[in-house]
Image (tube, rainbow, N blue to C red; front, side, top):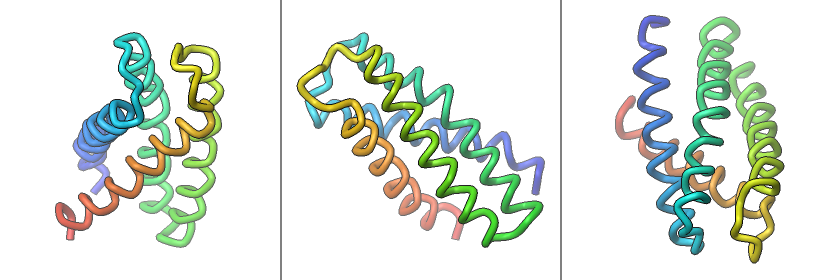
Length: 119
C-alpha cells in the first residue's frame, strides 16, 4: 500500500490544482500572476498534507487520520491565507476568504471524486 503513495500524491495534486484554479477563476481571480500563486502555494502545501494524512492513516488508523486531516487542513488554510495576503494582487476579496473557498472546494470536491475512484 505504501508503494501507492506517489500515485495518490500525484492524483491529489493534479485534482487540487484543477479545482482550485477553476474556482479561483470563478471568484474572479484572473491575473496570471495570481493564478500562478494559487498553483505554487498548492505545490507547497498539498504534498505535505496528503502524504502526512495518508501515512497517519496507514500507521495509526482512520481515527488518527481524521484528526490529522483536520489539523493539517487547518494549517494549510492558514498558511495559504498568509501567503495570499502577501502575494495576491486581487485585493477586493479577503485572502482568508479566498483560502477558505479554494481549500473547501478542493477538499470536498476531491472527496466526492475519490468516492468514485477508490470505492
